[in-house]
Image 1 (cartoon, each protein chain N blue to C red):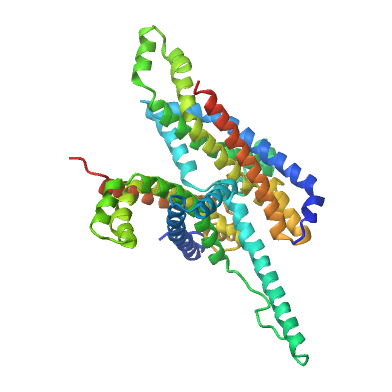
Image 2: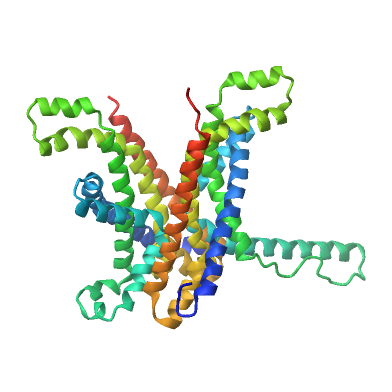
Length: 246
Length: 223
C-alpha cells in the first residue's frame, strides 16, 4: 500500500495500538465520569467532596506527570506494599510457629504492563473531564421526565437507564466529542512509558533509517486522519441525536 | 517513602519551575501575536490568505504536541541543507525547538478562540461604529477587540492551563523543566513516587495560581 522503509507493517500495528488504547480509555473515562457526575449531584457530602477532590486534582496535574506517577511510582508502591505485607505475614507466622520457614506468599515483583497503565491513567484523567460534561448534561434533563418515570413506578435503576441516560447523552454529546479529540491526542504520551505505539515505533524507525521527519510526519498525519474521521462521526451523531424542534 | 530527597533537591525543582514558567509565558505571548491575525484572517475572501492559515490551524490542532515537538527537535536533522544554515544554530537547541513547537501549537488553538469570539461580536456594535464614521481598523481596535477580549477570557485561561500541562513534554527532550527535574531526581535516587509527586504539586500550584488570577481579572470586568 505505502512504503515506509520496510516499517509499514509494524507501523500499522502501532497505529492500531494507539486507537485501541484511545478507545479503551474512552470507555473507562465514560464509566468513571458517570460515577463522578452522579456523586457530584448526590445528596451525600462525602461523595460530593470525594468527586470534587478527584476532578480538582486531575485538572491541576499534567497528564504526562500522572502517567509517570502511576506507572513508575505506582509500580514501586505496589511492590513495597507487597514486600512489607509478606514480611509481616512471615513474622507473625514465626511468632506462633517457631519452626515456620520463610516463604514468599506474595509475588516478589509485580510488573505493571505499560498497556494497562496507559489505559488506566488516560481513563482516570479523562474521567474527571467527563464528570463535568455529564454533570451539566444530567442537570439539563427536564425534572418532569424523572417525575413521570417515578409516577410510572420505575425504580432508581430503571429511571436512570430508561429515562435519564438516553436524554442526557444528547446534551453530553458535544462535550463528549471534545473530550474524545483531546484524549486521542493524549494517547501519544503512552510511548513515554514504553508502549509500542506508533510514536515509539516512529522513534525506533527514525533511529535506524535517519529519517525522523518523515516518520513523525506520518504519525502526525495518522492523528489528523483519526481526528478527521472522529469529527465526521461526531457531526453525524450530533445531527442524528439533536433535539428535533417541530 | 523518603521525602527528604525532595527537600534536599529543592533548588533543582525551583529552577525547573522557572524554566516551565518562562517557556510557557514566552510561547503564549508569541502565540498570541500569531493567533490574532490568524484568527481574524482565516475567513478572508482571498484563498491565498485563507487556506494556509486554515491548514496551519488544522495541523497544529489535530495532532499531539509531543509529535509536533519530536517533528521539530528530531526531524530538523533530516535535512542536510538546513544543517548548513544559521537556523541550525537554534534548531539543535532543545529549548528553541520546545519554544517553537509550543508557540505554533498555542497559536493555532488561540486563533480558534479569536475566531470564535470575533464572529460573535454583536452586529449592532459594529454598525454603530460604522455610523460614527470609524474605519475598519478603528472599529477593530476600539470595538471588536476589547469586546472580544472580555468574552475570550474563560477560554483563554483554559488554553493557558492546557499549555502549562502540555509543556511537561519538554522534559522528554532533555530540557530541565519541572518534569525534567523530576526525571533527573528519579534517575539519581530511584524514587519515582516522591520525585513525580513533587512535580505534580508544583504543577498544581502553577495551575491554581493561573485560575485564581483569571477569576480576579474576570471579576474586574463585571463592574
